[in-house]
Picture 1: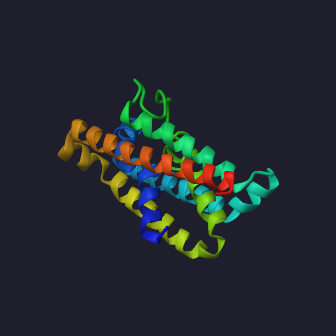
Picture 2 (picture 1 turned 60 degrees about the vertical axis):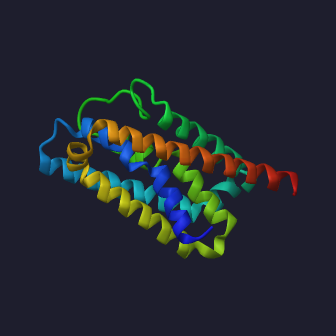
Picture 3 (picture 1 turned 90 degrees about the vertical axis):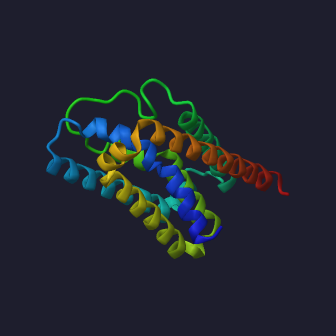
Length: 195
């Protein structure tokens, strides 16, 4: 996997366009300056969590006595389910019903930005090719920066593109994510079976 393809995979997993309506609804009651502060804080927390899993992922796998292929299969299943939810969203969206008050860590940083699929993806990258941590760090930062740019322009995007276009883009991203998840699952099964 190249750095660019890893960045694209992580960008699809982070799903910024699908998160635009959710973030707008979560931040609706806050003044604009506070919205930017909360968004920046949540994005930085998510980045920190993803980097933690990127660099400590192998140690986490070892401590839990998990094999790489089991994480690949589990990550593929989680990505598949998230991709399906992006294609066929429920009434409350991916994160469930919004809570009250200012969001802190949950649900914006975790699981909307740094969800289980993102954590599994960076653990897989680090455990598959640990000598390329610099490449994976760059890919993660590129995906995060693109996500941050989209989320900071959420109000503008929502006005320009509208709800239907954002929904269509999210469903397209869901289709790509389903295809990637199936490949991830098949790779895990192939490694497990030794072929």
